[in-house]
Length: 175
Ligand code: AR6
Image 1 (cartoon, rainbow, N blue to C red):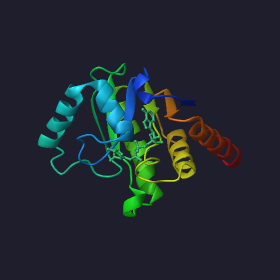
Image 2: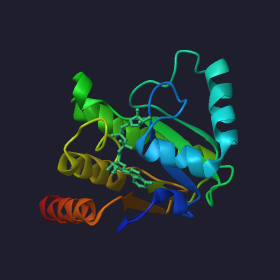
Image 3: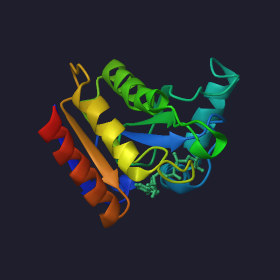
Image 4: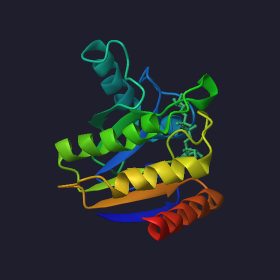
């Protein structure tokens, strides 16, 4: 699998699927979640409400992922995942790794070949970006992909991109 790292707005990505750093309500929020809902249009919220009326009555669990269409976005699907919230004491890296793994599981089920991720949990949810980078890159690198052939990490600032590039170098050097 090819892994690339860039700076940009994930809502402009033309990957088959973009991943949303959502919350368990699935009903929108700030940060990348707000940007994705704004760019996808109101139909995205409608699709999320349908999920909440069906199999996700209790909301989406931390570390899990679920897809909707991407509506007005250039992508075909939005994969919503819920990162652990460090500010609420969720500091287990296994929960964060699960976000990336479950998102890739869903991408595979959809038949997506290209997937774009933001730095899940590195904003409002308060995780150290370097830890997010290490967990994200290791999890994606080690994922046994069949249909997904390329993953792009779309960071929102150049400093974040540098953090991810450093983590990628360290990972390559140590394993
Ligand atoms: N494209 C790419 N990355 C972005 C964009 C964008 N358009 N906008 C922000 N980021 P956050 P979290 C980066 O807070 O920490 C929401 O309210 C941002 O700079 O969006 O998982 C949800 O509803 C940061 O590096 O997600 C939840 O309640 C990264 O995306 C909560 O925030 C993640 O920041 C989730 O918090």
